[in-house]
Image 1 (cartoon, one colour):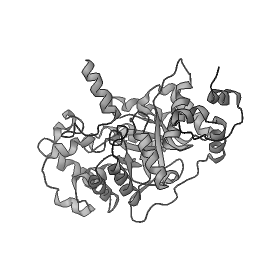
Image 2 (cartoon, rainbow, N blue to C red):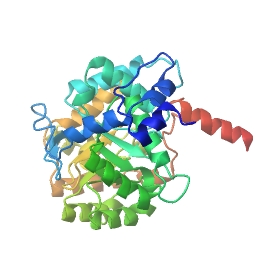
Image 3 (tube, helix red, strand yellow):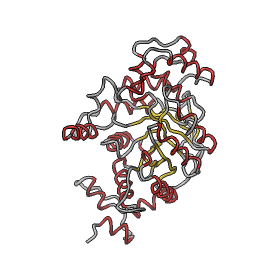
Image 4 (cartoon, rainbow, N blue to C red):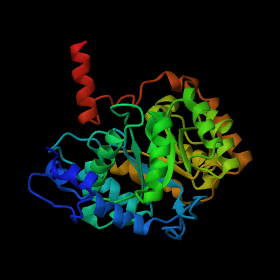
Length: 369
């Protein structure tokens, strides 16, 4: 016998509303009327901008397909927002608050990021900011068989519940998993109102050519790719195609997961950085990424409120022009140890931090092998 959710999904039973019960997300998912969510989102589906202006004085970029005006810096959540159930998260509330107060509205997350969706959904809803965020979420699924959408629909439902959002601004195929099926399905979701934009992502250079092909096909509105002052490969491939096709670019790995700071050690900032209002190495690295003409938003991730405040300094002051960008790159390339960035582990000196569901699962797997 089918459960109530599947009867609603397949028979279009007409029941209305989320039934919020004490049994939690599992019971809510079983009682959710897909028809209601579809009706609400499809009625509001639009490519018109939701963000016509941004906070005064901060650096902004424009989303080509919608006209949204977004801060050039966004908040990423991989590892940093993944906590074990019951763990203190007041520090993450403070990080989110500081980004919000500075005018940041772009937030990138994924079902793959452990408990990050739950953390963000709770923090954003409790502050009343949820619907004022530009949320870029992801899809990481295959299916029971070719073109089966069952796993994808389950993922979408769970993301809606965790983030307490009926629709997202961007839905992205995470790391190109099942991309040939995922992108057409997300395009359907776009028509039905579950997402405003469709994208593809990856964080490794080996997949830049594949990302580029999806951009060139005209099948996506957004592409997310790794890019930093130490790794500029995306400029020649993904960025060039995105500029030609009017596709917006989200950047991950902008500070190489802490490896840039490790590589430069105690080197002082160059004097010319002051011309751009840069007061720290974090701002130096972020402004370099934000200043590329193809980049729509540079994602930065931290669980430390002080580091968050430092990152946010990159949102003010002028961006470097092409000549200054090359000067910035040449300077760090000459620093001892900078060429070793790619060989360092993620988050060097912080291997015991970010102890959430992901780290616990990785530790359990290591113990078994």
